Image (cartoon, rainbow, N blue to C red; front, top):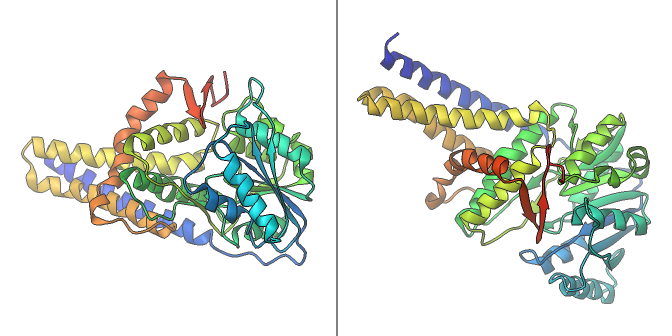
Length: 391
């Protein structure tokens, strides 16, 4: 087989594989939108929201967290670990505003102090919140999310309608609009890479052996059987490890159909690269191949198409280079299409190069994860051992 013919074959195979992978991921995204019936009775629920620092548009996030539209009794606990946290006063102001307006449910701001060694600040806030919580169900929500008036109810519906379910979580989406290249990178990471991979991993049953924990709801029985959220003691990534504990206890982690919005704005590409590194570190927590393989596959597709195009051009096979180049273009179109399919906004013309950024920087970011076993997260530095555990 001549070199030119080999490049041509590689180009055709890549085109077919990219189209097939895109079809499978798009089908998984649509499948996850199948709705479950509404519950006939909604148990009381406590929503614990650990907060550290002041997120983008924090006040709007706090207000949305108190206006969930949940049909049952609800309490919301904002948990801080520092009296001087810049997000504390805005949270107190929004809670007071909610009380004056006689808003639904009960709300409280707690300050619980710094975590002990070997425990992240977020996990410490979760554990302290559970001690105070009164609800029949226990939920945890991240402070950089902005729940609408359906997502909490839909997540509870999914939990109650799923046999043997111990936990339910909402898929997350970065809806936009993006203001900077870093914002687009974050949207691509969640909307085109992680989100579709979770949907595909969930399969027909809609459950996975881990949790994406930006909004997760547990039954009290589930927490009792796994030893509480403290089962993630010593872990950098609490949600994925807790989900693994749920699966080991013989219970299911189910994903709801209604997405939860994450709001971020003004992120530079450097800030996005640091965030990407954190997500790669989080992903080292024993995730199944059904989740990680689609992302590896897309990275391999990109680099094979890039290498084949480059080799064809360097050896003066310009016409043959068009086939792997078509693969590169198809890759970019697939990423942009998945981003829209998952709930993101269409990319503007000036951002069309950004679908290629993640696979380009991924090797360097992965190497940084291996060489530097430390991560700064929410103002705290954590030294790491293996499998995303705290050293």
